[in-house]
Length: 79
Image 1: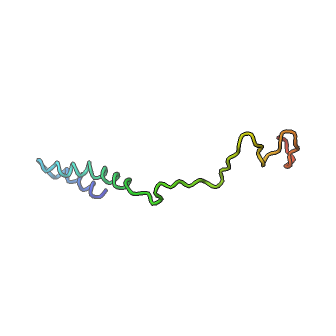
Image 2: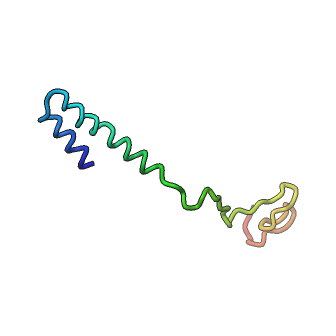
Image 3: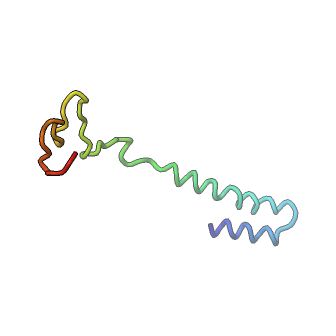
């Protein structure tokens, strides 16, 4: 960003065709900085980790944490 600010300040003092050089620097330096920053390789290599707290249940099987509709609630509260 310091180089870009210097390019913008140089626009005030440079005349003629030399004005193109700091103008291009002020325009394209941030673009290339963002492209280079986002082009880093992922060290995980695209490996996806499954969270351990997700539990898949079949819709036909009862949920082991909840009582069936006719059974009393072990926590004592209403359902």
